[in-house]
Length: 143
Image (cartoon, rainbow, N blue to C red):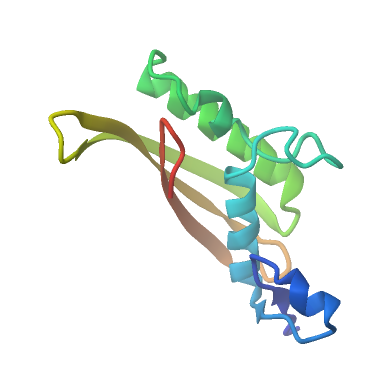
């Protein structure tokens, strides 16, 4: 059962020109789809308002406690991944948030929150364990 999937980001120019598009395996396809979910806000995908997660809703939230942010992001991601990524089952999400200081050339330093998201589950088709890790900064979001 060796299937190939389109690699993200999708090169639509090649599709229009009827050329071969890069492909990837099942795990890489799931990882790419989870990345799309984590970096999309609710309503961004006009044909499915429920696609995305709540990270964008808390992107500039510096007042809420880290525990509450972690719970909000974790609950939103579990719900979104379970409803959107049907190739996974038994999904768990572990979110950690740390503050990091970035030194600028001037006298002002910036503080950003590093969000680390570990997604675990089981691939429905093969019953193999699945794991992926996403890391990015919020306030504002950057990779």
